[in-house]
Image (cartoon, rainbow, N blue to C red):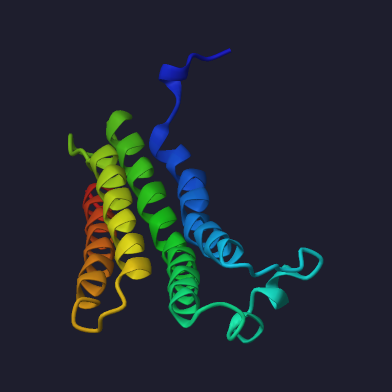
Length: 162
């Protein structure tokens, strides 16, 4: 039996990101419930569709619900790129350890922490900001997340290309 110090935490960040990605959806359903909306668990996607919800809660709640659901969808859209960045970095670090490449480090742990922080800010901005002019902060957070993922894959490609 291995100790917890032998765990590869960046690899574990992949299922953690999946759970993290669901948080906006959980928030969306909680604000609907707090405003009296009852969804049908026998057909949850249909009962949580915008057409089913609209008009049954105050408009401000409906708008926040939609932003939360959209944040959750965007988290899922980002997941394949995040997985690629983590796995490419793990491969590059393993190749480095085995002496197959130079002594470069991908900074994987820093990447994971930075990416989660950026995505947390993105989710908060997406859900809470309803003003068009301020919404560009969310777009900036999205771009920053894409940038760090792209750079992480680039660093891994540099190492694996040696």
